[in-house]
Length: 285
Ligand SMILES: Nc1ncnc2c1ncn2[C@@H]1O[C@H](COP(=O)(O)OP(=O)(O)OP(=O)(O)O)[C@@H](O)[C@H]1O
Ligand SMILES: [Mg+2]
Image (cartoon, rainbow, N blue to C red):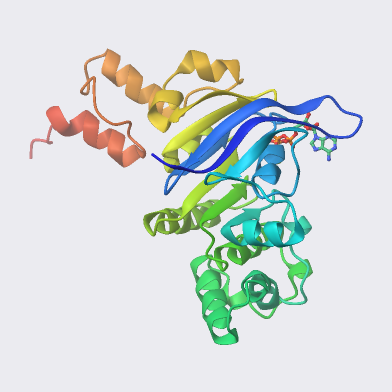
């Protein structure tokens, strides 16, 4: 596996505060979906701000491929066209007069032709289910709608790596499902995805890999299944395994499904495992 982006021994403290990141190291592998999972205040947003050069480490370094991050104006502009970040709070990200203008800002800055930008914007708005909002002023939208606009803006840049800070926070069920589908599609097209969340169910649904954060450092990084089934490890970050994993492990302990095999990612997948060997009894007619 090749790390496309990595953090080496980062330390960062906000002015007048204790360290928000301490000796934090993390690797992001090409084409994978990595969840940065941890409780409030664990340092997730602070790390993401380092990964696109918005914050500069006070110790350690960020590497893009094998190259240390270049914090010159030109270096940052190139860095951000490869690594796009969707902030936790959409209000910090949206500023144009209309939704379409806002979403076109990134691709226009990349120097793309107007026709290409228009196609990118249309496709991003459609993917996020907000094509009907194209002409609306963003400040008049709901929180969830603004969040989708911010994500559409990053998607329209077609970055190599898309960083999303709490992407489903504030979205309703349909909006969250739609976003998960979009992110899966982007992943299938080869985009590397990194998202922060304290929602372990989201990590289970979407992540290939998980980095478990606590107190500004990485407690563990590995495959989603290894991390999300380790109840003792998760407890150290104040988290519990996803409900589906709990049920799966209980079913395994009772011999109701095979003791090995990949972790089920959906209720349907768990049902399929449970009934693979003992089909449900049919009603006598
Ligand atoms: N702008 C800031 N000024 C001072 N301290 C900050 C600032 N932003 C974050 N912190 C502190 O840095 C630490 C890490 O915060 P961070 O926002 O990275 O956590 P997080 O894991 O993203 O949390 P959440 O799940 O609530 O979004 C916390 O102790 C927080 O209080
Ligand atoms: Mg945060």
